[in-house]
Image (cartoon, rainbow, N blue to C red; front, side, top):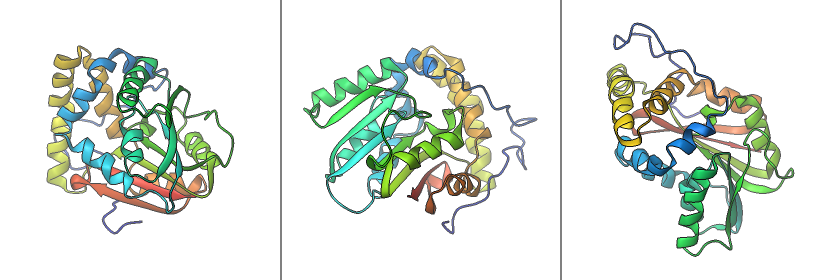
Length: 254
């Protein structure tokens, strides 16, 4: 565990931006919500993160396991930004992305085709909780901003470990909460009051961005999430906080 990693902190602790912490929302068929906002998803990701999401995805490429000609699997791949970023490392022979949101995948396929990568990158409809590939199949498995949308997080982590080759690595990029009280207060104000309004104006779906802040605030992060990875059988689990801790990359090896 990294020295900068902190225990999971309930957002209401010492926070006066809200009278109580939000209740964790249902993840049932959440992919339908992402299909609804698919056309504006990339724009909103870049805009609402201040374009930091691109840097975070690139940071993950530096954490791939050793070796060349790696075979990649990206879960909840959406429009394939993470899969493309990992492939751009120059160390992958090919990769597959799976997602339940077919309209998101259609956008990702267009990106892959536009870059002439259809022979080495493939997108398929699939559930990260029941990965449709055999055990010991991939050198690296990633999921970016998707693990908190799973109905069975522990089961998803176990599936990620199952499909990895021995020595393979799981990389998980997810929102988290800053350790600094002041940064957390500002961050939560933005997430609770500004982001849902901006998201509603641009995407036409306020509920999607209310869901975002509710899932981020109620999802385990830092030490708590590292424990989940360890319990799923990963070793050498490390958390890499990014941008004052508003996002974190977690890595664990099989």
